[in-house]
Image (tube, rainbow, N blue to C red):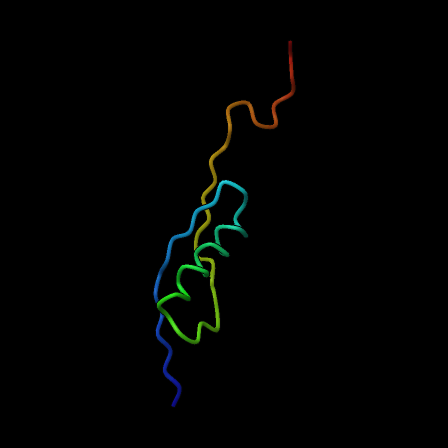
Length: 57
C-alpha cells in the first residue's frame, strides 16, 4: 500500500506564476524530502490599472 502526504503551500512572485511555483518548491525542499508532484490548486493575479485597455488620449 502506498501512502502520500499532502500539504498546501503558497508561493508568490513579481514575475509570473511559474516563478512562484519555483520559489515555493525551492523553499519546501529545504525541509521536505522526496517531493514528487506539485499540483496548482488556485491562481490569483493582480491586474494593473488600465491593463490591456486601448490608449484613448
